[in-house]
Image 1: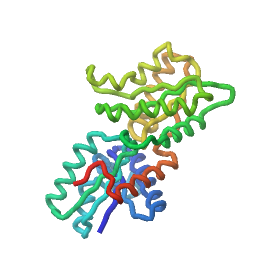
Image 2: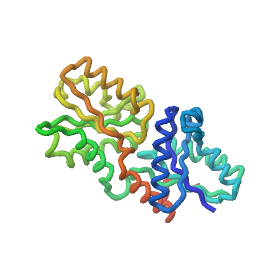
Image 3: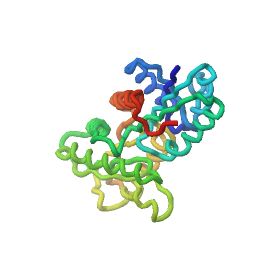
Image 4: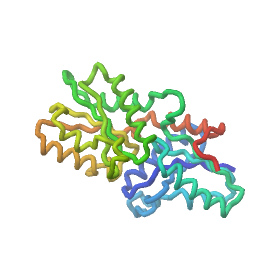
Length: 279
């Protein structure tokens, strides 16, 4: 008996849980498999009344509940761009705890949305380009900044750079330039691969005044990319300091309809045994 979970990191903002549920429902319809939404952390603290009366669940308790009901195989579909520590460290530890209680339980963690060692896949860049084009106005060639959260893992940060190069090629004839930035990073030279920070880039006179479109490399709205979140605050401060800037964020790439196709391909690969982690 099998259970499939679409898993994100989790958020205290209800909008993130709603988006995860929306994508899980679409994936269930598209794939023909029942896909449940669960978070690694945090979302179970959101009051149920803020989630249409349905409490959010975290993966650990959800897996143990499934095992109690007779499930002996779990497939985890990461709603993550790359192999963050949440997937490579925390998740295996949490699943090992569940397997301690249910020794016959098998767990497969599918590949994240970007496989740096796999074949070249431009789908995410194409969807980012779609989102940018929604914000283009005639007779303008704006600057485009691909922005993500920032990561302490070089392999995850490399995804931003790969996508920036792909996006630059896709938009070459439509925009003035394409560059990238992180929302935040840890202190110290060891994490310079996240530079420049978004606030630093927007303050730099080398970035032309005029329209700047932020290509939002985020999967769900929350305290960073949601309404009134950190990105919005950074944008507001930058436009206050440089009144010549007009910063326009795109939709989140995780809200693009194509994300379901990519997740379905990851699910099919996992069913055939191609996994990031198997335990």
